[in-house]
Image (cartoon, rainbow, N blue to C red):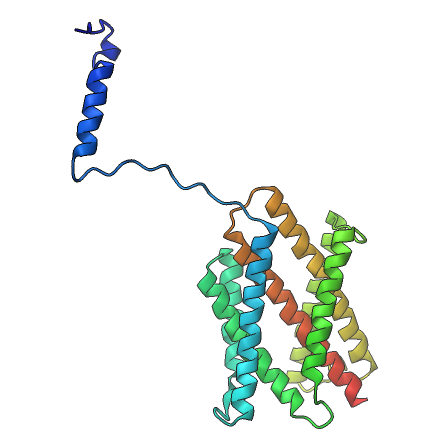
Length: 265
């Protein structure tokens, strides 16, 4: 017989044989569930971001094509009237995702659908103008070309994302938003600043906006690379896919606007 320990801290422990028997009895109980170790957290990878971004873009593209098809086939002839509501819904969802820094797939895919309806309606309206046929495809091709080009620029290190560069791009974005807000207020008051009238100034401003939007991709790429190096969870891929989608939408709309200026002149 094994001796009991005289150490008070060890008296509650049984002998090895007794411990094995007790464990066996526990496992033999019908209601016993063996303990499981917590699932290991998977870290973010480039493939995760690529897959989620492709999913979000495809959902938005299918939504846009469905909107155009339903209008042209007269199945839902008034669907273009959903452009403004879709824009509002997309804006609200974007704010929720940004402020909550959400990686909820349902929320982000809902944003993609709303943006698809919005972009499909806007593109369809432009395509319906005489002389603007095919403008949507041109804008889409140019947008993807810029995206791929900026990815190459980032990978080759042709432009490095430094704190100074980041501040410059953010400052440019704030300046652009401020200008567009002032222009909107001026137009509501009956003044025309020439920012969006299709003239030379409008073309220059559109080109500047396109350049800033293109360079902002570098900030997105740098944030993704930093998150991967820091071991961010794989679910963050949805948030980065959303971030890239926001920039793609902005770039597409501005290229579409620029093309409309050039075709009108």
